[in-house]
Length: 171
Image (cartoon, rainbow, N blue to C red; front, top):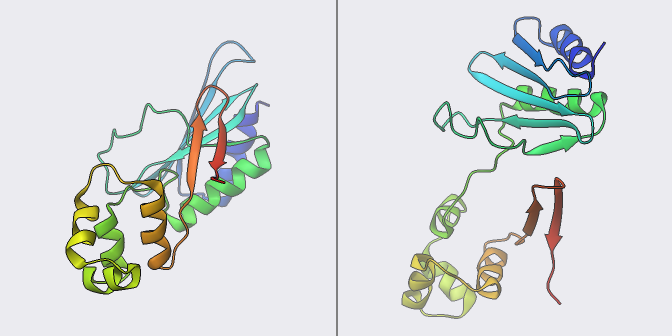
């Protein structure tokens, strides 16, 4: 039994009402695919011998085809790890692709005004307002803003050819 067929069996047991479709190439070492649909929520799994299980799920606020042909967002080397990730995505109805936010949207979500944040940063409100409208912000400025909101800025580099993700640090 192929790795995708094994995963499919476990998912059918966990989610008996789900629609599950599997596809594979004629080559036993070729790509294999699994799509799991639970209600309106979909998770796609791609298996490649050299990488393991690639998993993607799509946001409910995106168009139905957005991200459909992108490379998987996450990779897992074992069927067990892939099963647990797919199950957690279904239970939480979460996307593997993070939503993008403007600084002002994060500030609003955090319940902060420009005035309060600019005071915390020791800058004029008008100066902070300009920062929110910029298309290009210095990393150090962005870090200060995120930390003033109670967060931590993380920057990642993703290398599609090796599926490698590295967190960037600065000295």
